[in-house]
Image (tube, rainbow, N blue to C red; front, side):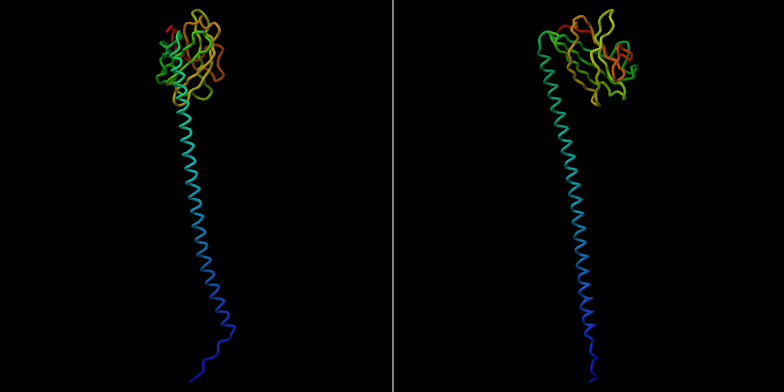
Length: 203
């Protein structure tokens, strides 16, 4: 029987080394796939956390808005219970429709002043948000006299606003309140469209 030629030892070592390299390469590929999958899981977790944080911020904003609304409703309840409050229901100006004023909507408001004239409250409803650079300005009005500025204010998309302020010392001399659209810093006298106007009445 012919004898098989002997395999050189160097060839045997090379084969073993090659098999080891191939095995390690397979393990490395598997490990890299596992690492990539873990990275994907981490990214997905970060995305979920970011979404949950956004949801939390939204809920916190809703809670803050609800709390602010509750405070305003309590303030209105308090004012409604005060005796001797002077009130003015301020409606769209009779001489200028909301459409003609450029404001649109169905704006209206109520002004109240305490019996000792120490504090006032103006509540506005459905006043549209104004373009940048403009503001609403409230005025005290007396027959034969120039209107006196009360303050300027802005409203958001809800169109609602509730503003406490100190009225003029001679507030009893005024018989009405009006609201106009003015430049953002306010005007010394009315220059813009008249949006709201109403006479004071004694409750």
